[in-house]
Length: 555
Image (tube, rainbow, N blue to C red):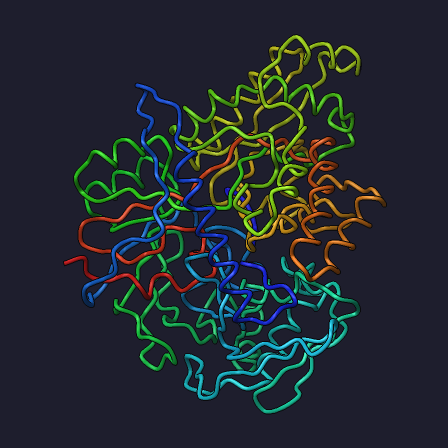
């Protein structure tokens, strides 16, 4: 998230094999549709043209000793309970594994649990794989799973994923390799999130031995294809191949993540071969990287929307007319061209169309018809500001040098405010501190809004729409509406996907009418691979899928 948390392909209460096939087909169909219709506007300012979404990169042809990868910020910790942003999850997904696994096709499949069953609407049973070893050589047991999920539920840990467990009444060991989760009420979302960092399993002994240092020093006590190696603070994080891995062995002996906070430095490192690749490519570098001949720039499904996150409703933004005015004044087309390098599409929807891949046509029509307009209308925006008595009011928007997608959106909002009589002031935050906006309330003090690229962790609109429920983790502005809360609860309790999405369509309209976040654009995942390597997935799956294990020699 320059960004967000969070977010896996949901698995409703249906037989696993059948549901996976249906969702795979639906998601791949959505990918094909997006590839056909999501082309950016043409331009001569360095933006890319002819953007197509790729389902994958060519598979690796062999093993390599190591590869290097660029990340825009250093994770403050690699503790899985607070892995709620791009830098943490990009690395952690290769070290720590979850009960279920998100796939590059944005579906779920068995992970550390070889089977998940749902004997009744409030019970989930996870049968664990035998013989799985942690990086210290000890075998995984049900006790480790109970402990790991318990850390997410412990209020003292302030886990970023605590909301996932809000309907969990108990997690118990029901056999040496079996864990039973009892729910307070039916929850169609909980099983899907077991493929995200919410479902990570770490060694009880290892975490307890690390104590307060867990996540920042030593190992991570996990089971993935890589284990944490040397962490050079402020510079790099090394992962070493774990040869005792239960699954397919990683193709590279080592993966080195280079912390490059400056966008130009990241781009130059890719062009020169200093690093072999990266996700979250600076948008201003798309055209340059594509034409460089040093590698390939790919785009894939990101389940991502670029938004203005409203974090304070105690000031002028507490009046929905002011939020509507800002939305009407925004030049979304200009931002997509300049801020996203042309690789995006203007939207007036908080959710991506791909998130509704399993919805019938009638539900799509309900969800997307009659949303607030995305076209710029300065006259109407000025009238709303005058009506609200907000002329001359001051707002503070956070910005950062992470990339043009962040800095230019902040500038666009400032320009929109100027045109309609608002004084929008920008507060620059360092890239390493920007991620704290998602986890630390103190970091958001004095800030009314900030650029937010939100990615879904599950292929279901409720992943985003649930953020506006009273008390939700990312409900930074403290929005509260009993009717909205009731709809979220209703949707959560419904397992059949079509019925659930009918309710979610109502949520989409309420959140959009209130402009709880201001939607700006849909944005695909960008990936650059130097000529030496291949195999990395193109989709947002890299947040929870052990993608680095697939990276190997291109020749």
